[in-house]
Length: 142
Image (cartoon, rainbow, N blue to C red; front, top):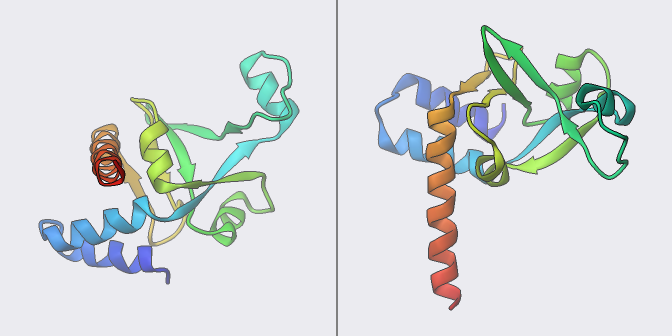
């Protein structure tokens, strides 16, 4: 069980506790996630674009009319979900928050007891938090 799993378990027990919320989301934005990607040619075929070997296309899955970016907090969980080794990129949580376009959802640790969906409003809130933290850090460095 990871620290993120423990924080999610605490959050589920007391959803209205600001300390539980703060702990979980702080761990999230400061964690590294494994985002499954399409392999080169397959990614190009998805977009109908020429292959660029330096570019990756994250795997987005549609479910119930929503598009989900798949995220895993370990390679093992990603590979278990994919049922084999899979291509991926490692992305910090704060970068995910800053770069995820609306109305994309996130699906964290699918097929585990610690799976958690993130809705666009939740992602937008995380983006605001990261932007505020970055602005504060910039002020302190000036």
